[in-house]
Image (cartoon, rainbow, N blue to C red; front, side):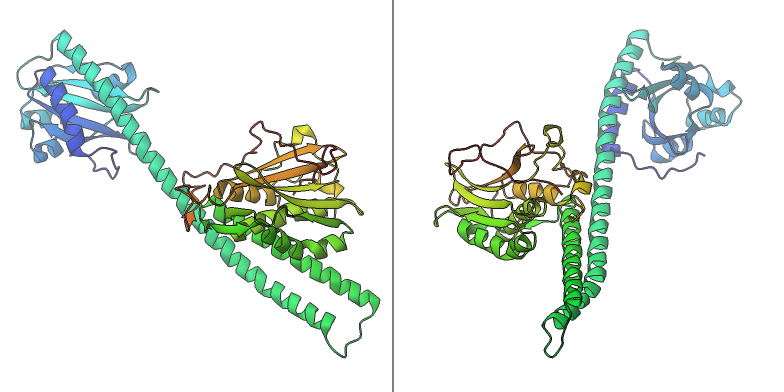
Length: 447
């Protein structure tokens, strides 16, 4: 008897049997066995039989793929005829007598790459074998079966790989969440004590002490921002982001962005100018994620702008969408680098701005959030004159009528194992309207 196999085949016995039946019938044989190769053990396993009971099929047993006529069939990619098996000196002769077949044909089948998949063992009680035309037809059927079997096997492997990727991504999100909790706890304590020292009554701080506390507070905020980016990116990779769409006032979200970033702009000595457009512009989006994208874009523009520069956040109501433009007087981005800025973990020339910190994830996250809200994020830049980012989202009414844009829509960005995070340039270079008729300046975009 052969060794049992734990290998899982991509097709069931009911799906395999018709192929064996057709080939056995074409060969005018008395019985047949479909044997599939277990590559981990290099054994041909008898999976199903035709003209045999299950016990007889098991009795036929497994065979090594590198021995006897099986090795010849695989090596030469052809049908091998075995005359009078009873005269052979191996264990197969005894099994042939017990099962009642005297002659056999071994018909191998392969992947398109030449990798062996298995054999059809065609068995005869008295006949010497199949005729030439029958053998040719049986070989054609075996080739067709091999194609179907290989496709099914590839599908199963892909599903298993996808499941493993999803499992790994989930584990990564859980790890990052736990790490975030462990890091946030001491950071919150630091922030609390700093705030007590800065605002505490009866406590007199020297100018040097006040400056040191300010630096501690800034460093704490930077670390919290880095942790938030890492969590957001991990969830995007795992497709674990839920979008809650509703009507959002463009003017309101711009004002909230100003409230968050005005202290940073003042600290950097950068003027923050708002142009919310008309007050009745309403966008169909997830308010929290829209806020996250705008804060990230404007914060980048402020951090990379020189002292005395101006950063502008404006809103435009186009025909079919609402556009948010972030524009500044920064150093701009070289044309050959524009395709890189939306890649994760990319920071362009960080040495030129030593005061900035980050993973290089902000723009990758922003682009994915824009796409998740059925919008787009593009950039146009001119070295020495600045850069501009444009976030386009559906207007309320157009977006609400879109069937996919419902409350609780979940991101599916990483369900095939891999979230695409390439640039969204798509050949279009947005031109921003200028209030004075001149070519608009643009916000420097970097991580």
